[in-house]
Length: 251
Image (cartoon, rainbow, N blue to C red):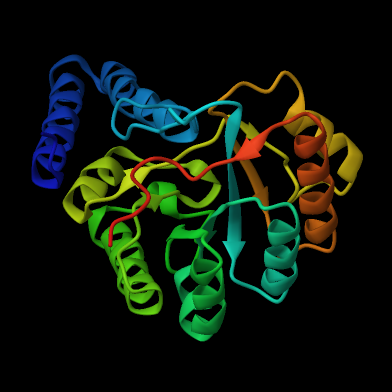
């Protein structure tokens, strides 16, 4: 199993090898060797579907004509409204929540779990621009603190983790193994943090949908409630049902 110490040792050895090339053959060769170390790691880190260091589950083995609906970045003021719409359509969702927001509003976490949905780990502060570049200490803190908060609020530890923006580096997978978490990616995303045309986003999410697909939307935006409502209406019309992923219950 890849552990954080082993990864750190491997990275140090790769860098020493690149420096040795530069020492023996000149700075141009050393620069090329260093690029050979960093560019593949950067490509893997910034490819949200990458799996070499951290398996990203992008579809789920669930029964029948079912999909997994995931909602990121809560809890926030629209949580009660989203729960009401989910109840109206008898739909289930995995809420990837931000630890600080959960700590400020544990009542919303209780409402989510009481309604039969799942809360999952989306880091403590959602450092979307930096998390991918952080070392193991900072990543472990963001993830483990959120685990603690959600365990206290929900009564059981979360089963799933998703990195901010989906970017994770070689340390992330090893830390998730240490903490007993699985990484849940997505099959389709609405890009609803950058777009507001609900009809186009629903069409994107539902086009040629396959059983077991994992859909990603967000909450906390002016169109979030409408997007959820129109998405569930379309899924119901096409006889799709929502299902929690296997392995969710870790009570």
